Image (cartoon, rainbow, N blue to C red; front, top):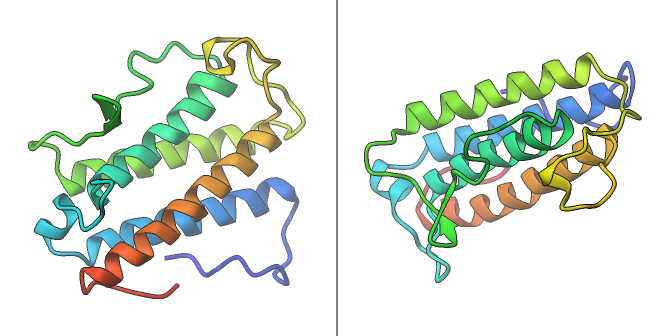
Length: 168
């Protein structure tokens, strides 16, 4: 797992800072879920009912929606493929290994886009923006960092309740 991206560690620019945080949060999510027993990965301890595996799948789709479908304006067959009946969903045949591989592949795609694009660049017009002006890549990255940080905090609590790994 990469080290926590301390503010005192020099970076080549804002894009590198965003990528360090995303890598750290993404890897932390995977490590926390990996430290849970399979029944804890697929089960929920929360009134809302979400599971750690559903969170992994959700975060992969968050990156897909904001980077590929949104910023790049690509045609994505099922941008909301992490949901079913208005809640997160993982099919019984979907494995932790498959979901984490998809999350890591999506992360590699995000990295390639950020490394090859100016943060001030605006996203392509498309349905992701729901009629609003497309956001800059910097705003999209800021949104992704907060999304990961928020959900990693949720996962910290779930992992602690399940007797899994705790802390940063």
